[in-house]
Amino acid sequence: MQANLAPELSLKSKLTKNPKGSRHIADFLSDMRMIADELAIAQSPIDEEGLMFHILNQLGEECSPITATIKIRENSISCPKLFDKLVDFKCSLKENKVSPLIATANYTHHQQGKSN
Image (cartoon, rainbow, N blue to C red; front, side, top):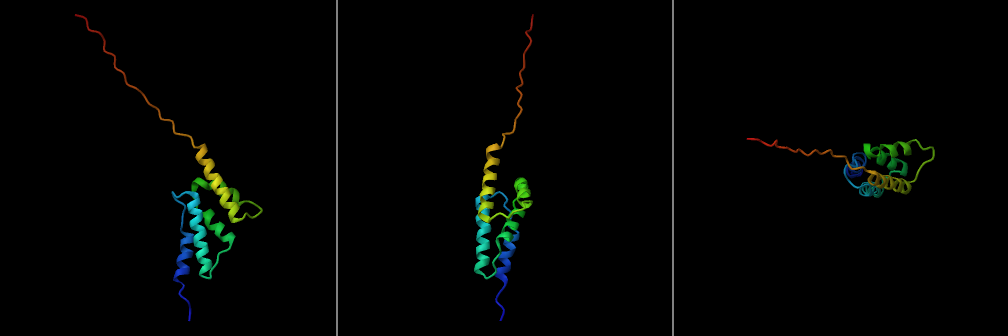
């Protein structure tokens, strides 16, 4: 008799469709690690390289510079090292964020003196 595959398929779907969105990078990475751990418990583990693939593909445009850099590396990177690099990258983005310049103008009205 075949075991119910629904939980495994649900977890795999979560892993592939879990964009970072507005979550803090540490929360996103923790969620992805938790899904990978649940897959391992369900006897369908994902290897580190596969997990990194899913993480990098769901970070979004804001992280594209570091995503591209990691993808073209010749040497592989471990998940803990990847997590550290991503957290550092997000912190540097926050530190370097420049406040938008808001131009303002003040309207003044001068009334000409009236002579009688």
